[in-house]
Amino acid sequence: LFGVSKSWKQSEGSARNPECEPERESERESARNAAHAPERASHSSVNPRERERIVMHIDMNAFFASVEQALRPFLRGKPVLVAADPYGTPKGARSVAATASYEARAYGVKTGMPLFQALRLCPTAIIVEGDGRKYVSIALKLLEILESYTDLVEPYSIDEAFIDVTNTVHLFGDKVAIARDIKRRVREEFGITCSIGVAPNKLVAKMASDLEKPDGLVVIDRASLPDAIWDLPVDALIGVGRKRTLKLNLMGIFTIRDLALYPRENLRRAFGVIGEDLQAAAWGLDDSPVIPTTAIPDPKSVSAASTFIKDTRDRELILSALFYLAEKAATRLRRHNMRARTLGVWIRYGDFSSDGRSHRLPFPIDRFAQIWPLARQQFESAFFPPRKPVRLVGVYLGELEPAVGYDVPLFPDVARKDRVDDVVSASRERFGSRSLMRARSMIGEKVVMT
Amino acid sequence: MAVSVIEEPIKVAAVFEGGKLTPVRFRWRGRAKRVRAVTGRWTSRDGTDTIHYFAIMGDDDVYYEISFSTQTFVWRLEKLETE
Picture (cartoon, rainbow over the protein chains, first blue to last red):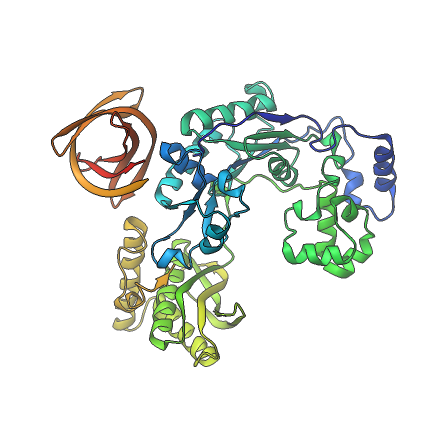
């Protein structure tokens, strides 16, 4: 996946501040004893009889771009942007950089940046059309490597995973040996690099892997917490995004230390119960387990959305996209054998303002024939005629529950539609999402990006 | 740098070794090419078919992507890239 193997970086103990100054130590102790420190912090004090968990976060560096550079020697050492359908519109007008190689990042290009903007920053960048099947195949092989160390492997995204080796570490030497071995195998087998964070929990492991990129290995053990993370900006915490960072900054919280030492009551007032969770995270506390794929619970909701290549007010085009999305959401729902009690639609206009409607249903639904008319009715009554050109539409199905039992259709027509749904779902499972499509959803086929 | 989509059947000599299938040379449009390096491999499903893809550098300094269908036993040259 990722072409060039860079210098090996490793920092044992604390990652950013390995030298634990006395002032900081006393500060930590007094803070830990302070009334506003989270109660869970006192529970985290090391109990010698309690074995420290060993969790790793493996993050493939610039995954898609690195895969392309590893496979295609002509791309190595050059700025590369991987994008979906970059040639679907003139100069990929609406496409975004799914990944940028490190050479492109040096110019300030970021993942998710619109291509036209990325090209403005890095005019020499080579645009490569992404190949999802290729990346999925390689990601699955990567998971196989991880599963050779433990059965507790949790894919976090296509290019990230958590593993828990607490119970298997003795079979492979120690945690650093495992991490090094993973890095070696990834490099040898795929020609790419990964960054690994090793810590007592998922939260800190992910932060550790972010500290050294690309090709890093950072170990943070319990003894070095929370100092190891306190000097980092507050947005380094999982769950602290742009909006939350802004709010925290306005409260005078800029580093994780600021958050850890902030009066808990004030955080609770500002963020509700989340405030306490944020503070616990700032102390490096997280007891969430690594959940292997086989134990991943059913989804709480499913949704599908599409962006138009060009903002539009065209009624037929918008309805065609909505039709396609209702079908897609229905297929996803049936794949999980679930039914929905809430149906929602949403819209985003060309100026990026958004609006949405959702409705609780008197009975749960899972059939396209039920979902589509309701979605259409809701959409038409709320958003037609559109007051501004439309950029994106979406369908949401929530409050999911298992589709237990079997409703016997009383009318032949309903039974026939049910069978059509079954055939469509089965075909898509086996041959792909576009193997069988209703004609109406193909009206927008050439103009809808999915 | 130019990418050409080819999608034509080709004749391939390959070895099965160490649990892996590895192309070593191929003939396309009457011209023989040697595989200098396999830079990567991946698989994909197409209905009931499993297709093995190989990223290779030829001895002519051209990058090729070739595929092998386990259902039809047909090798294809998918695309090539020159510097």
